Image (cartoon, rainbow, N blue to C red; front, top):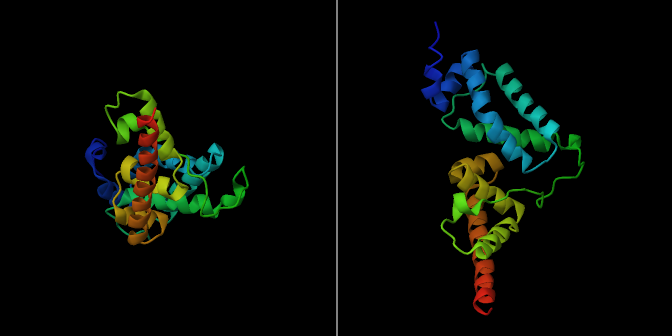
Length: 195
């Protein structure tokens, strides 16, 4: 007899993952419920075709169920799922309604929420808007890394696995994002101080 359904409320991801791998449909459903929305929110920043994204996420979970006996245990379920959806989106790119090719400068749409995520207690609304604009003009890969780091609270190892780049590349891109922000920030301060 399997665990009580209430156990799944407190079960951590790796426990749910192991139960799912053993064929437990309740654990599998719980993983879907927990991660479908975050995966959709992430995928939408790459491709804005909602139906396509829903299909990608559904396909990822269906493939996981069909391959559950061959899937390894993992303590990092979150990055595993993010990586699977990212790979599926790019592999199926020809089906995007926009039909554009993927390059290193692919769009990554993220509207950084300054007040709740990165900068707090800004009394000057104009300054807050300017900072938000600076963050949102960073190159897509830098924005994607900031998204994983600050919105999904992922470490460098997880980000490198998801984006299929080295840990050093993650570090370098994050440093470039900080540097770009600082240079724009200094220019902004000069403009504000000379008003």
